[in-house]
Length: 369
Image (cartoon, rainbow, N blue to C red):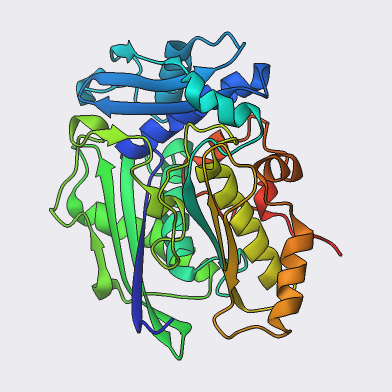
């Protein structure tokens, strides 16, 4: 990478777009608990005092979609009707059966859609993820935990982070800027918000990764105040944060979102497969940076493109890396789903703070041999 500065952002679990993602994936998990072979393409939209459920399914599962949605909204902290969005907001359910024309291809183990997907890994962090997005995610996660635990009582759900990292000779050197937006109650002053977020959220997070930031280079709530969180201020939609979900702009992402989609949808499963391959290349020391690219055609089982780039950082021959990738995972749709064991209700844990870099997820595992 030739940038001298690079910025990535993350959003809290209570951000409107993440509320939508969370509802879509909670419904998906509820379906997969009963029917591992289900097909789903679920979309959620949240706005002022309104929740809309859309998309298509093919399943034998019996799930109360509205109940799942309300439980998810409650879990995310939206229980105050004064915010004009809560677990009691009206729900409009428009979920319908999957198109038989799409089902034909998937029934034959083909891809549920066309598209290209990318996976990436590098040595900048222990998670083998780029530093800017890793720090941004850790900031929003720490912010949410402080609210959920009651450690900072005046926090409300919703928030954002943004981190700018300075690079020297392609390596992270320092933290240039940190920006955070945090929703808070009316009875706290901006000065206390600023001081507390720096001392309790920003400084511990950066120290965990061996960095610090000049307080003069920190911005908290750029407009000064933020009292009303969530969809009353900004509507949310499933899949609108695909760069946040991926690599924070540091590496390429494909054209499709993840949440609400069962693993027959290569937008999701092939992106996970590409990350799995790239991470294992870097974890095995075959290169210090790797990107894997896959592409599919609807109804076809095998990828139409399977490529990788190590950006000149490889420590072995490219042929050896190609053989390693080919042997590690069968990249047919069925091969990915079975190889990574994806027909499980594991997707709610992906909704906030990115889909990559979380050690318990199957596509984050490093092979032992």
